[in-house]
Length: 114
Image (cartoon, rainbow, N blue to C red; front, side, top):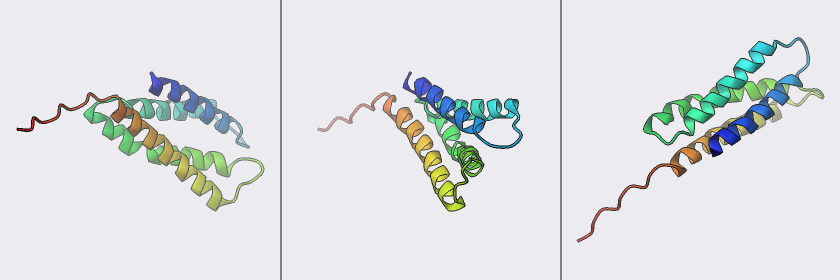
């Protein structure tokens, strides 16, 4: 449930950033990027062994979307600051998906000590 709630907030934050960009915008492309990132986050937060695959893929598209948002905003942001902020966002989103995935896994039974 936490993953779904966070994914909705993440989607709203991303959509707000994408809609604030200047120039011509394609709303279907924005919604597609938004759904892909939210789905990647939700799949990466699932407490299963295969969820490492979406978590491995998640940082690059997240970084590129946030780099686009931060470099196209008005007033202009210096590129190094936009690069650092986009890297921070990508790593935070990925690490939070990993945290949720590991948090909800069933605990392993401790080995019996004789």
